[in-house]
Length: 87
Image 1 (cartoon, helix red, strand yellow):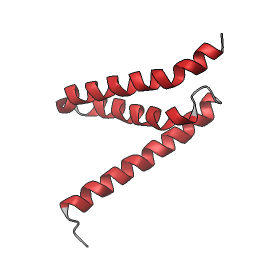
Image 2 (cartoon, rainbow, N blue to C red):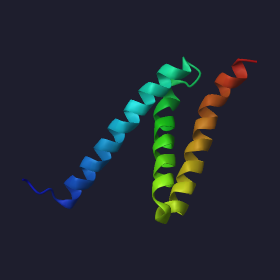
Image 3 (spheres, rainbow, N blue to C red):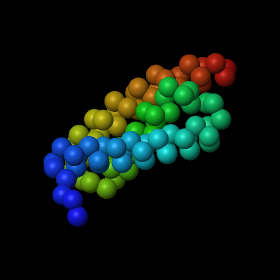
Image 4 (cartoon, rainbow, N blue to C red):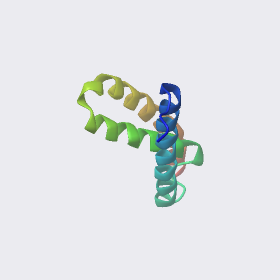
């Protein structure tokens, strides 16, 4: 078994998280049928991951709450034109 260095270990974790985000983004894109623009799909996937992390790890609560707010505002800015165009 090959032991990974700290940097390699962190990079592997980040790669796995990004793969999960891409999977979630693909699902969201398919389910929303164009309501969520393609530019915002990745951010929505990251927001879902952050919410899941928030539910699982109480000790990182404040940091995750701040990140969730930032991504939610960014997502709202991305989706708002699509919502306004519907009316």
